[in-house]
Every structure is written in C-alpha cells, then in structure tokens.
Length: 340
Image 1 (cartoon, helix red, strand yellow):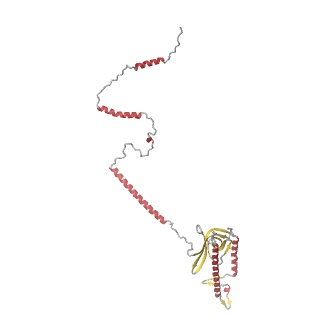
Image 2 (cartoon, rainbow, N blue to C red):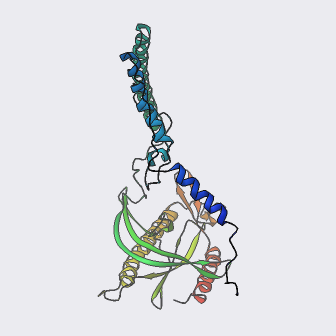
Image 3 (cartoon, one colour):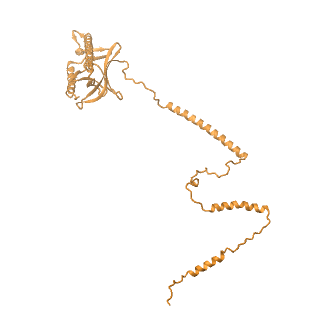
C-alpha cells in the first residue's frame, strides 16, 4: 500500500504546546488565591501622619506624570518681568520697622522738602539774573528814522528809474527804481529848493541830493529827462537820466509835471542870480577908489568887500574857460544815452 502525504512538523510547534500547557496550569478556574489580612490594634496618632502624607504623595505622582501640551498654557512664565517687579506669592511687602528707622525716614522726608525749597529759590534767583542780563543787553525798541527832510515841504513826488553817467567808462550805469522828490525849505526868510532821490526798497540809499541852482541842466531825451545834480558818490556835478512814471492811464504824465516844476524853479533861481549879480555890480562901483583922477593899481579888478573877506570877481577869460568844460561833459553824456 502507498503511504499518504503529510506535512513536516513545525519547529515551533513543541514550544507552542509547552506555553499553552503552562498557561492552563497557572490560570485555572479551580485555582483559589487566598489573601490573609492581619488585623492589628493601632492608635490614632499612628494613622493621622500617614493620612496627611498621602495627599502630598499623590501630588508628587501627579506632577511627575507627563502632561499633554495645551496651547497657550503657562504663558505667564514666558513674560519678562522688570527688575524689582517680581514678588513672591504669599509674601508680605510690609516690614516691621524699629523706632530709629522711623526717625531716620522722617528726617529724610524733611531733607527732601528742604531740597525742593532750595531748588525753587535757586530757580527764582536765576530768573532774576536773566532779567538783569536782558536789561544790560541792547534793546530791540523801535528807533525813529530821520532822513533830514522832516523840516521840508514836499512839492513833487513820483517813482522813477535813474541812470548815472560814469565819466571813466563814458557810459550810463543803472541805479534802480527810486522815489524822486522836490522839497522846499524856508530858512531866515529865504526859500530853498532841492531834489532828492532815494532807492524805494532796502536801505533807502541816497542817489541824488542836490540844491536846484540856476545853471542846472534840464532837457528832454525821448521819453526821459536829463538833469545835472549833485550826488553822494562823486564830489561835483553829475549827469543823471530820469524815466518818471510807469502808468499809461494818467491824464498828465508825471514826467511833464516834473519838467514844468523844474523849469519854473530854474527861472526863479536865474532871476535871483541876476539880481544878486546886479547888486554885486552896484557894490563894486561904490567901492572903487579914485586918487588924483586915476584908479589905483589895486582897482584893476573889481572887488567885493563882504565883511572881513574880499572876493575877487572872475575875469571874462576865466568864465570862457569854465563854460567849455561843462558843455563837453554834457555833450559826452548826451551822445551815450542808454536804450530803454
């Protein structure tokens, strides 16, 4: 007969059977476990300490047990406290002080009060010193501006643009926009007229300050007026070119008013000058000394006795030499008139 097919026994089967048989012998239903409890008589003092230590042991076990992480927990431990702000929980800040310490604290408070009082006194003294220093410094009070025209009566006033003739460059130089004035002053019964021009902005710099005299130049040049006057920049007579008035709506231009006033004043000055010359001639005729029907050698030139000073009258040749010099300067100024 042929044998049947059979599997090869497993190597772990013997060990498995052994473990199974051991487990049956240890955990059988009939196996009885008897725990013997020994009862002893104990006092109350032995039981209380053990019961008091039991919660502490439980707390330690709870603390030692790992806890799950909770978001936002213990955030107060991560906050940085300022120095001196951290206080122990349950601790009291108040401290019992002795009598000497209390006395010392009272003395310190009095010293602090005295220091504050001294600081106030020092501040008041410093304020008084500052006030005295301000008084000693130059004050900022308003100063009255004087121009020398306070006693004058204004006849004409208008804005104008001025050019001054430079003899060295033989050309006109612009002086800017100025305030042109004609003033009148009465002194010792005599009336005097003068022309004044100052810059209209800034330091009010004087450009023209001249008395109106009989030989003063006055003529029209296109829309401008040429005059000869005295200025602070040059010692002597200087030629100026004036453009008066900037508006076109005025009925009578300021330039015409200025020209007419200056013409009338020059006529008055020429009349006064002619009267003075006539009076000088009469005075010279009365002072001529005749001796033995002949004039003395000192009488060759007319003389004017003005108190203690004798002024010699210029000869005709000297007058002829002075006039060409003035006309030459005027001709050069007229030939180099600046364009508008």
